[in-house]
Image (spheres, rainbow, N blue to C red):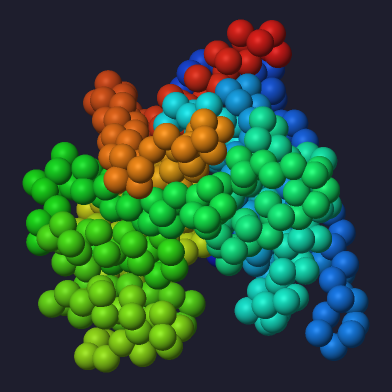
Length: 421
């Protein structure tokens, strides 16, 4: 997926490589190590024929990128989006490698995508597409090889179709082949809220360190899907004042604070946050530059750019989305003293909950949802404190580079131990 920055095209994979290079330089690694760390182990492209409701057959293209398995099997979601492409899933799979490493999870990085607008497909067509995609990648996934999960426009129902298609192909019920499943098929209720809860927990911890606490702090959330909505919900419950949220239809703003429960109800019933009454309508672009304490970009990548970074007023940015800040914008924000909690930490709640679910599947059920939430919060807070401590020692580097340096060093050491480099 390519965005524009002035006249310059921004390629997600190129951005990921640029970020890696900065971490490699901080660690003092050589060019050989850099090549080994940036190169994917496998990238799969598949053709998915789907018989549509009108009787015609359409061809969809999908991908599964498997970046690095030094720390364990590949792990990462599958997104359905009309603009996804190979570069995007390659970037996302690399970020997943660093994310799992930073959280000290026994996984490497993977990511999948299908170029489709699921909002234009019927329920039956989405099921056919999902089964076709998973059948096409079935040789390359497994509970010890690659474990997909939900992402943009995929959900527990999608994972249920994946499990059933895998069962049809291999003849065994292996629930651990995917995570983010319905509870009746081995999922955890925690997984639904995990990413948004993790974003909120990190925002609260960062606010405690840098803003004197979360109580009364003004928050703006761009993107009111699963991640953004639950992040807003938990922060509101913890005393923050969520003054603005947005989705693809636009945004709403109330300096007195939005009633997040009501916004969630409106979004569920009417599909658009702008249907919420008694709030000023704003654009997604306007939301990013509001006068708030905490900004949570929880939509798509490359929304904070060299063009709007100088205008951002938030003191703290917590990245709910993958790759929402361009490298050039990172530099601007760091020089301005705005602390950016990077995506590989801030939105790692989903993969952390997936790890808990995966272990639960493999052990026959060992944890309750309440215990899973406590374990999730513990993992997230520990990782933030590791990053914060590293930043105190290396104040000359930005938080993203610091987080990646911690994560990359762990992956590099695992590769050395295996004899790969």
